Length: 109
Image (tube, rainbow, N blue to C red; front, side):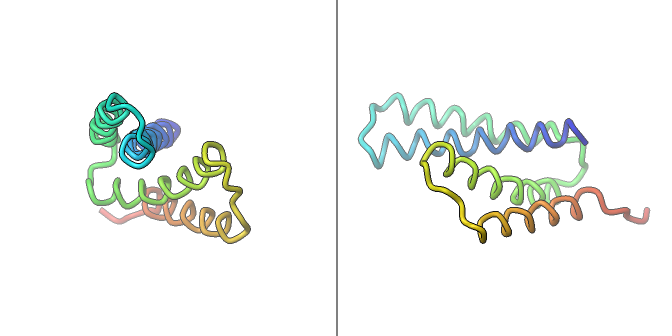
């Protein structure tokens, strides 16, 4: 379980961080190397989820979606200085419950 969480967080940081660098390049006129670095980080994001031990691509990405939402809220709070409100936290909690159900619910053979 710990390795799954670590991989989800790593994938999320790669996706958000890479996207953020591309955003800065295209939307805030940062140098082109921001876009190049962001693109390379986004390639890493595409690779990291393949290291998950879960056998189903769809299930891994469905669960990752919930983790991504939580990480995006935290990124906005820490990097963009946009304080999440109560509804952001409630939504994040609902997503984490969903992730837990998707990944860890007992399933028959």
